[in-house]
Image (cartoon, rainbow, N blue to C red):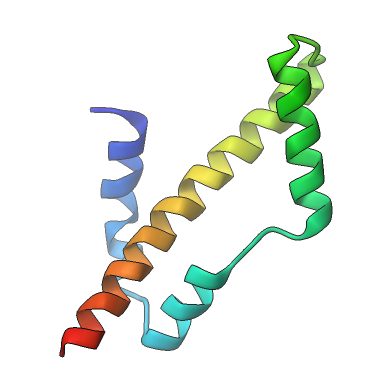
Length: 86
């Protein structure tokens, strides 16, 4: 089972907590410009093989947080889609 599949399964119970308003807010959630810029900066350094150990840890945390948020957003979209059909 991939890490994304494990996260998906672990986050299933969380998605049951979404009301329509919360799901909509989560779907629209975006990182602030400072966080986006820093992640892009770290990604560029990673591609160049120029990350320090501390930056590597920071970048991995950004990627992991992004994966969790993306899975929760996908679950929120499904929740909203199901609510629209009802």
